[in-house]
Image (cartoon, rainbow over all chains, first blue to last red):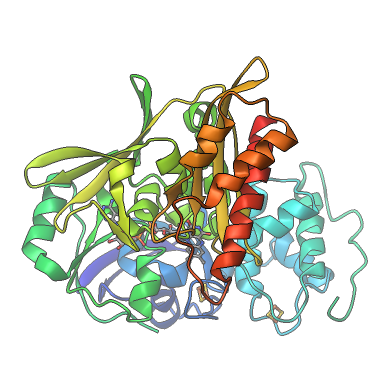
Length: 171
Length: 283
Ligand SMILES: Cc1cc2nc3c(=O)[nH]c(=O)nc-3n(C[C@H](O)[C@H](O)[C@H](O)COP(=O)(O)OP(=O)(O)OC[C@H]3O[C@@H](n4cnc5c(N)ncnc54)[C@H](O)[C@@H]3O)c2cc1C
Ligand code: FES
Ligand code: FES
């Protein structure tokens, strides 16, 4: 057993864990933070994306012990005072999900991208979220949502001026 | 899936890490960013008894100037390498290739040293290190030794790093003012290279005076395309001259055939991509 001390969504935890425990299972099974999901065995899908010390990571590819002393933000810690994060709102408004399985990881990846590049063009969004796979939407509305959130998050913006027209179905 | 059980240490000096590896014996494994090792452990393709985590060695994350070399700590994350100003100014090709590795999440964790130590022949950073004559600083119980890139890559997933040794630093000569380009061919997002070409050129008065070209996934190790380099020197960077030089791209290669591509297709790609990479490097 090894000790981890980690802050998750603003709350400090200290736990004994097996060194082989992956961060995603620590979040889900120890802390009950099941908002973060596992979608693959190969580190490809990105469904498990969280932020570790301010950077997006695939939490299935990080050991819990590697997060020792660190700060983790999951999809469950994104809303503030009951208000959804602008990226969460944009995913809702732009119909950027169907089954929703990829959504927690997509949103965490998008928040990370916008922190780095507050006004990405379409190509930059597509490349920025290339670590996240969606089997439902065809990505169109996800890209729209990220760009719409970028607008809403510009300094001075109150709400997304105009959410781009959502497209239903898989194109 | 979940990895098999292992013991875990996180040393705080290189010496401690080397002695932990020694005590751990044959079954001990170094953990850097974990972006190759943890997927392997999850699939249970490996089951080390001891994992030695280099994550506590802050000094191995440094990137700095050392005389006429750029010295990059083995634990520098891909993301930090490609954003580093010294890298962008003096070793631009390394930054360009690093941007194509995997995806943002993987680049946040994966390290330069880990990628080179892993030595996947499809890896993007091996051909850059080889073409640019990087030096590898390797620490063991008897201190440090330096290995040139030409001797570092030995075979599939095999390097000059010994069993109880740790790669601590990778040093690049400066290529300030050179043109460079990394041309990667793959078919899906976050995929490895089917073939890729790393090219850097020094151009004086319209003529190529020096050239460096490295290939990914054309053999069991990265390959230095010396035939192309020699054919380029002294030429003007015209499409015809570059295309003629690129015909030499398959010399000394031993392209694999696999589910992604047959060997002869890889050879075709090597020639075409070499032409593209060199022309783009020429600007
Ligand atoms: C989805 C995905 C896509 C990827 N796509 C690409 C790609 O397109 N191109 C590419 O080049 N790479 C790709 N990678 C691999 C990525 O570059 C990894 O970061 C890299 O291969 C390993 O670096 P790491 O720091 O994570 O090393 P780890 O996974 O921690 O270690 C890898 C191996 O190197 C050994 N090792 C690590 N550091 C040292 C050291 N300092 N001294 C001695 N031994 C050491 C370890 O023991 C282990 O055997 C991809 C990975 C993933 C998960
Ligand atoms: S679960 Fe698929 S990348 Fe982590
Ligand atoms: S909405 Fe179903 S996987 Fe993306």
